[in-house]
Image (tube, rainbow, N blue to C red; front, side, top):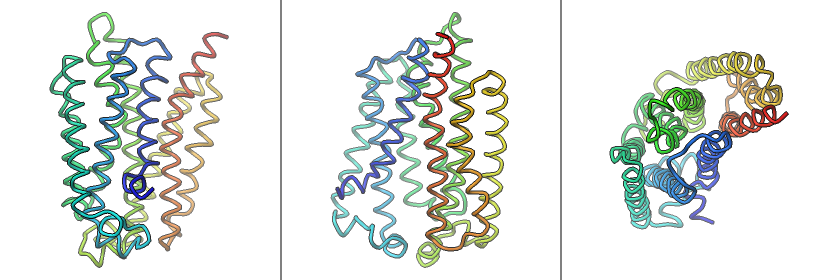
Length: 310
């Protein structure tokens, strides 16, 4: 159980769900050609999860002093698992992911795609060791990795199959994934800023320079509000432009309840929030938005298939 907490198993589950939603929900259910069979796609999921798990482990290694203040009841490194064991797990996970990534990249004829895993691992390490303490840079890096996850199946499933005959079709599908990736990036950025508000006490005592420390708590809340408002407004426009006008009412209702609802909840409460518990609740609301975004990929695909059969 301690090990599962260390690697943030609910987050890993969401990552796996994201990858499967794109591969099976968006690609295969609509009969798009894909480069990876089920076994190799399983390896792609495994490699991605290993990179993410390694990132969580190394983050906890470098966050021991801060977590002792912000989350003393959730400290694992040094209490349940030694720092040496944590480093060994991190190294083992990252190397295994890189080996699997190279195999898959070579299989699809794009050996340079192994760089996706290497770059992601490097970003997560630099975030934990250095950039988490820097103003905004750490937030942007984590959000970038969150967005990249949506594009991993595009790189390994679709890009290797692009030829003149399939270019337009696959490019249109890839564009949908880019939209999801951008949305994930923005919501993740708002969530990272909110988590900084939650952890401001421990971050200040350990010498970090996060946004609430540099700009003040209220200014940071305004920034989080603005980022989320842009995301909410853009999502409402997207729902109307692509789903309402297409008569995809089930998708529309799903996104209004699952994504727009939590976003409005966030916007109504962020400026009045003051305690770590309130910021944690708002962070959870944004996590629900990310989950709704992932599930909407499947909902959209099923709705399209249902309408086509009808």
